[in-house]
Image (cartoon, rainbow, N blue to C red):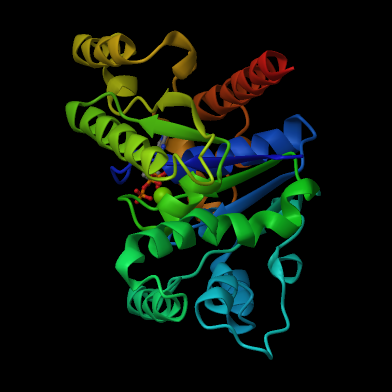
Length: 305
Ligand SMILES: Nc1ncnc2c1ncn2[C@@H]1O[C@H](COP(=O)(O)OP(=O)(O)OP(=O)(O)O)[C@@H](O)[C@H]1O
Ligand SMILES: [Mg+2]
């Protein structure tokens, strides 16, 4: 059975999408792993990092995006014919082992979700326990969407939006591990702390029922300007040291990702940098990170066994 992974940080622009698509591509290309990327962000950055816009346009016209599945849950339609298998785009970037469930600029309507859950609470005589109905919905929304394909992949990696919206909460509830990319800056650390607090709260709210088993696979530092001023710029080192005090060594990735213009430019080619410029410093770091990622998963398997 495959592992489900969420890439999350409440803070925007820290490198969630870049990490997701490069890690997924490296796993598929260099390590022969079958990988599904799911774009849970209405900015569709992961989708457009892997597919040209005209290709995405064609899929969207045929409603072959994640929003079709979410709609099917929020407003069930007896005539809906497509399942998740029909929506998954295969051989992404020409790699036979890399697949994508494209995102959408309109993923769900918060008002419709509230209305549906309110009606459900009335029908089930649970209006007094509306929070319970809502929690249950969040707990299983992404889980149920993934259920038919979990065994088809080694890894399913979900790119979450910044903030802490319904889909992010549901992705966290459905995953085995989460990856936390962060810039070594004070505000980014606040983002880590806020997320950790929220995840603890989410775990507590499901403690008695369908408890969550997710764990932090690791914090990945995306080095910001540290790459320009040098890896050992004092300020960044101080911040990284502070994080090390709050987390155990196995909760951090030893590999940092440097800023590399090739990584940013790859987006223009609709392919991750590990494909467009495999010898660039950014791509090499992503490849090393992928090895470390697999090592962490192995360690976890050994501890389980
Ligand atoms: N290692 C890197 N080298 C150069 N540019 C990078 C690197 N990592 C990310 N970027 C650039 O930084 C910007 C933000 O990265 P990205 O979109 O991955 O962040 P994000 O956390 O997913 O953002 P959002 O919160 O908006 O979803 C992008 O323009 C991306 O190309
Ligand atoms: Mg993103």
